[in-house]
Image (cartoon, rainbow, N blue to C red; front, side, top):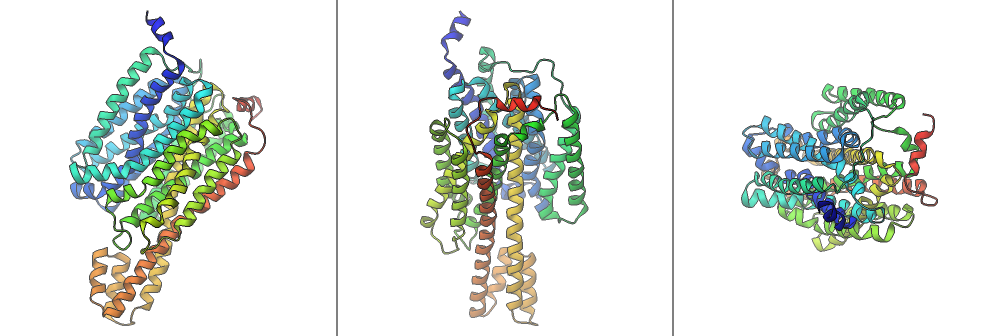
Length: 531
């Protein structure tokens, strides 16, 4: 009877159940990536955190995720994807519970690290689970839905965090994690019991431990250095030593991957231009998303610009989030049979166009003037999130889909980390140059000049406003306008960086995606070539 009932469940219905399970987990992972940014003031007040401690509340999560996602994805190929996915849910729940009941900063950071490790397992296996459970003709649609859910969750994260932090408690964010993960776990038990996901484990495969150590020593220190460099200084030992370790680990990773019979990362797949483009495209998508997201939120919440609350800033991004969701769901149905070259190039081009248009935003701009620009960015991101994973994974043999999913998602995480850092560098360089000009324009030799110079460099916004109020009306008005213009220029710099990254990705797509669409699993031929 049980076998008969199982036969009555169509493959499409099974895929929908697996999609529901993975979608819930991706919602948790996605909004935890961004929701925490809006409750940082609450965490600072609760735990008396330093600026460096606040930074690591965010960085611990992303560093753990970026470092582990490739490793746990490969573990899924060898030991079973469902087991690793269950482990990810459990570890993420432990992290959320630790943050929920945290009484000090150490417990908070432990919880965020555990969340990051759990996110790596969920992110690294969810897409390969979907691919394995879905008939080939339906894979484009479910991959698009997966990308749409990730993008939507990242977009609504600030709204969720802001609403909970303002109206309930910041701890409610992590209580919601536990509720959603419990639902996903229950669905997962059903999926596992009914065997909705085929067993694609590699018989006799051995885990590449040297490769795992090498990739940990590459991504972990590199992510740490990038996260620490802007606040701690790029020339300090705390930044330079991790960069040196990452550089050495890169060489070791290449050597051990070339020598291993079954490497953690099969480098020969990167010889396939379309697989390389899938990984590079997700890197540029993550780069532009976080370069935009972090600094758009900062700009629209500034009292000298839009002056939005954290909830208002989240709502302001909704045109981007909704258009990304709609395009991610619908685009694969129409574009899957065709070459990916023009859709991917158009997606990256739309993102670049949107960022360039946003460079006209100033402190006097009205929201009605920018919502449609966010729509353009969302359309581009929707195309990229839905098509790029599919572009790469369709080329791989079934037994290496988990590995490919891990590599593509590692590129997304690493791109996001680098995008936030480079966008921040562009902003800080612009501000430093502008502040030098503003300070030089102040009356020479006056006490006010010294006080203002110190406040502009090290002070808080309220201290700067108090000093400006003490100037004569003409000088105060001119200085306030100069500072607002400087803020506009800094935002423009971040948008320019995002636009350049999208344009580089578009150029790569035009070069690498030429020619007819290759057959399924065609990258497997590369593993039969000599290393």
